[in-house]
Length: 339
Image (tube, rainbow, N blue to C red; front, top):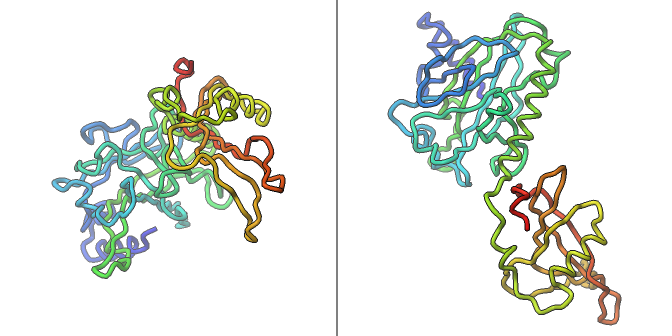
């Protein structure tokens, strides 16, 4: 959270008498809009009041500056670029609920060069488009939207009624010495909407959220075609590492995985290497390049990887090749492409 919100807004309201919504606009990098439908090129049909049964979408506009300048994205040292988001909810008796930590919103397709950004808050599962993750590497923790506070703490916090939601999109900033600035200096855009909560909507929203998460995860994994290395694998002379021999090993050692295709892609360096323990004793010999596989699960075709090894028998001898480790869901492709 950005705790400076509370103090800044209170001071502005007390000194000017303006509304909380107008106070939020003071010194911010733009404006935030909300709607029950995804935004496109404008902020038409925006509103600031919703029920817990509705789907909610957001949009920020910076005016003249592109997002990368308004939020100083040059401070991000990793790829992809992103913005952070968090929220605070206040119910009528003054009790507050904060999001613990922040959620990352990924900037795709040059979004950082635009003066607006449309994003999912609580999207309908089949309309979710924003890549939302719990980590900046965007390799895990995917979600469809980021605002689902009634996923937990229902006994502690939620009761039927109207709530105020303050939602902020921001980025951390640093001083000339690379030290993290005080939170009031972080560039942000904050908006407020009211939410009329009814407990009977929770089950449907939770199911929608899970359906959306699964759909987003599948969309993230989709690849357009069969990777080239399946038609142009590595040229290996070892007779024990032909595709047919590898398939036989995997069917024997991984009977629970329906592997339909397996190849070793082109690689540099030696084919095999030796693994030793901390005392320098040989444990096994392994095939350095990963075996890339396609396997079927629930009628879908996924890309995955497998490693192979030969256990050390002593006296400079090794056992037969066997399965070592398996990684799945590295890609999702049309099964019709697998021949």
